[in-house]
Length: 251
Image (tube, rainbow, N blue to C red; front, side):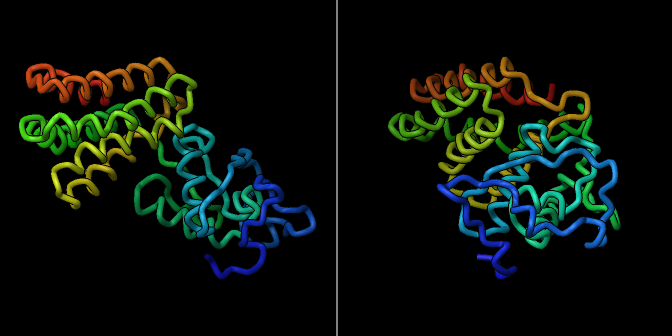
């Protein structure tokens, strides 16, 4: 748990998380951060024990679903007010997103969400394919069908999230499925690198800030088809589906 004081301890009534009480707010100008003209900060629920971890999860969700818009600047106090915490855990979480490349520091103002174009997305897809495709094809030849059957709930979770247009939920279930597949190779470092690349590929583009539900459904269907082919040990179909899956990730 963060040690930033009582205001950093999330104590939602009845389990719901909302903005901090008005009496606890201090104007952003007094705290030395410019807020004039900045877009509304996203409201989000936080669920885990660490305040910094809760805020980081909430910010990542807001990045994926477009509530943190590419190119926009957000101040830590304004975001903290929305989450019902002080600016300190927000700044700490944002620094992690700086390391990941999701945002950049804007002195005396806050953090700007990174702007990405189709080329960067295509480059990420290419690197992911270089890492994941050979591993998946090797696993297709060596992993028994029973191990693939155990991953069925993860594939089904991507379909369920896509069906209701839950972009943030889909992002998590998508990475969970890919991580479980790669985890069968036993190389923890590879799984970590692949997950970082996968997370970066899920941030919205400037030209298309919100992923279409139809695209989510198509992507989820590929997971199901791939798993079916792996269980059937149909290597020809597996190879075709894996390469198509990553080719589509760059469009």
